[in-house]
Image 1 (cartoon, one colour):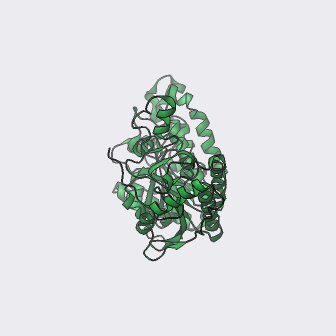
Image 2 (cartoon, rainbow, N blue to C red):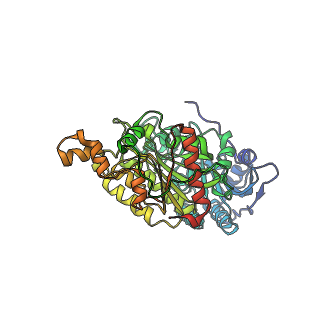
Image 3 (tube, rainbow, N blue to C red):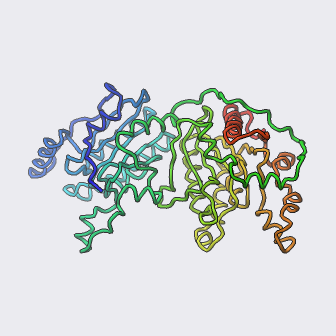
Length: 482
């Protein structure tokens, strides 16, 4: 893989910020307290980079929305962070907090400035403190990792974003490979500290071209900053409580298991806008059987977490990592003060040694605990299959919806039949006895609304109807739990 182009700080500002919107927050750096040799090095670095330090900060707009920014300049002593640079970053973040601005950081750094030693090293703590104050105020923090980003920068403000992306081919790692080889006498394994590998392992959300950063910021802030807009999709009259099922519930179970059934991707495709997919736990784990995203469902901004039936197979069941991704979504929604929407559609959680050792039961419990203690509006939707603890993990929202053919059961009906009757052939009978269908759930008060289905429904029409109902509930907080 070729070495990525190194974008300068000013080039990043010109690329990302709207023309003429740049306002610097930087004050001159005083280098008089340093020794003569280091002063000379700093002056040479400034001449080479065209900047007075390794970071530039300020504010501007991205497609009309105000943002604060912190941008590394690698040509200034390899983008290293000394005391002056750290002070500048922390001050900018705190000013952004005071002004209620999102922060966009674009890193390119070798880490802590060795010429300043431990005093510079510990400044990463102060930067992190300022960022957590910013996040604590419910303000978005977006991170763009440029080539290269290593050391203390990656281990502090480079890894604290709500959304984190990197440029293609970027070297991103805790310890630079040259230092590793010098210390250990052997090269670092090839291909590990590369943006694409980190994305594959759920450490960062995506790898995107630098030129796409303005669009990414636009999508993110479209959800995180812009107010809700009036719903436009046509809402169906919900099924009336007490409506009796006029066919065996087993028919519904088979329908939700069939090809062509609506899925969470259809909700995004036909009812969402400004969608920004987030991938992984950001802690080194990724499971594509769950999809999480920042999005607007029929005009309502939210964090979406949905079980993706198209990615759940016997070979790739929903594992404990998927529920850890779901918990990341819950934490994002709570911190960013956005509604959370969960979509239930699973044949069941993974049953294996890996799942047991990965704390599947504990993750189900923690998801339930997280949902029932959230303070933002929450809506869950039983879209199709609602099987076992994996389904229950995303169920207990303040408003629980279901499609008319959706269902919820403690085990696959075949499994329930084995437990009660010793063999699976009486699954349909068990499903009826256990009252797993959406209409029974409505009658018993376990769901608050059922979206009707018609024989003519396609994934598109049903997706639009489901999104319309979600949006109506989010747009009218008084309906929560009704």
